[in-house]
Image (cartoon, rainbow, N blue to C red; front, side, top):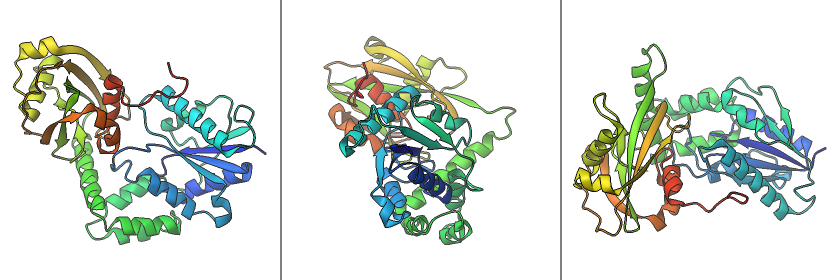
Length: 356
């Protein structure tokens, strides 16, 4: 018997395979910590439900007697596996310390999981926790469930759910029925279809495409320039001005062009060159649902000059200067990994305990 069992996942949505793993965890230890990944991400076809909704689904699927034994730990994506694993470990330690009992540093901990594919490699990131790798628990997975749910014809979500009833607990089915009545469901369906169309367009390529993009991060008087995306994917979400490079451009030229097209920022190239600080590459394989996308973020510091006027155009529905001290509260409104890009340059998040 272990002191604590750990179960890590996104649970998008909670299905019977997840519950089989959770029941195994409950049999292995008197208390279970469920780590909910992608905790503060904006809604998307990959992460359609927020962590509070998923926590409620997990608890509602359990007998009353087991609910008090399960503790929920929401953890954000960092697009940096060592940092994410460190955040999980520190979060678990802090949660166990709050619960009392065996001191976290002496507790016997087991990690329950299933090696679904290459994305499950994180299970090996926790030395000191005993890994219990279990076989696949059901014939489907959350990706297939989301595909069936979001591909349903308008007004026919119930038909799709009827075909999934053997894969989902009643609490998840009830939640998905109610969610299908909300505007968020229609918006996510639009996002799903846009992504499918893009993948279909590239399906004839002889090998999986790798996309190269640029983004511009402009800081000025304690503000940064952001847009609201006009189109799916990420319609309405906050993002840095940017886009795909063109074949006849350098990265620098693409960055300036995208900045001008989306914001009509009229700063001359020589002013931008003087304000330029650095460029960083963001290339996490899962950073974009559009496929493998590598972006080059150009950072400009305009100092104390007045923020230049901006006007949204092209792929931007809105362009605005946003106070840096408000960005930490906007994480769930940011497109893909753009919040973490901003954090990389601006230090929006408090350091995790033990970080330099």
